[in-house]
Amino acid sequence: AQKITQTQPGMFVQEKEAVTLDCTYDTSDQSYGLFWYKQPSSGEMIFLIYQGSYDEQNATEGRYSLNFQKARKSANLVISASQLGDSAMYFCAMREYRSNDYKLSFGAGTTVTVRA
Amino acid sequence: NAGVTQTPKFQVLKTGQSMTLQCAQDMNHNSMYWYRQDPGMGLRLIYYSASEGTTDKGEVPNGYNVSRLNKREFSLRLESAAPSQTSVYFCASTIRSSYNSPLHFGNGTRLTVT
Image (cartoon, rainbow over all chains, first blue to last red; front, side, top):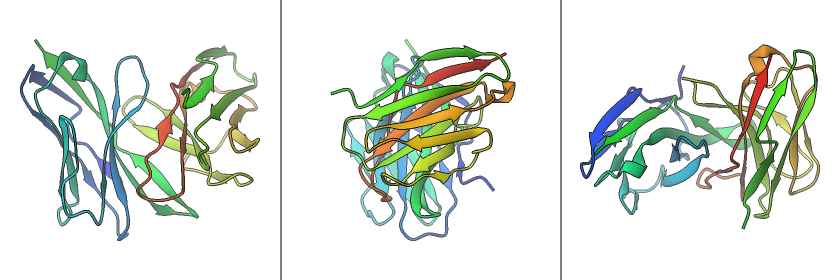
């Protein structure tokens, strides 16, 4: 079964508008972490934002916020005031304890294209 | 501050050739990882080293070996390359084995096996 599901392969957003990227996850652990990474066309993986399973408040980092709904096992990324430089692939990931280590598992990613 | 450095950036191999991908981090991180990225599949864990002196298999270890040379360096070896190993390979590290510690990634190695 997929641990991390990102149902939107690609999205278009107008510059200066907000966009929400969906992510659902599957775990029976109590302690886990949820992460979002950005991969621009140059290929590097950039850490954006983190949400812990015990955190009651949604995480925010500048224009990025994470809409965490624990009961629904949902961790959507919201990018506000989109910029052309936000065009990239975005990955949702979850870190949980498996075989002696907290492993990071990734979703398939969502490509975001920002239009001027 | 270099972070995680991978070499080489690009490599083309013929089927059956061997090669080693190098990874070094200068952040004094304890845990290191090798992932491969294929279109439509996100990143999949090949091998990891939770701490210096230990290595373990991840999700897709077949055809690969690793060496944690010291705390800084973690190499990935392909003994006999196959076309199915054409992929982008990422090395990553994190300060500790914990659910709240993010992984920091190198810039990747694009490998083509013909």
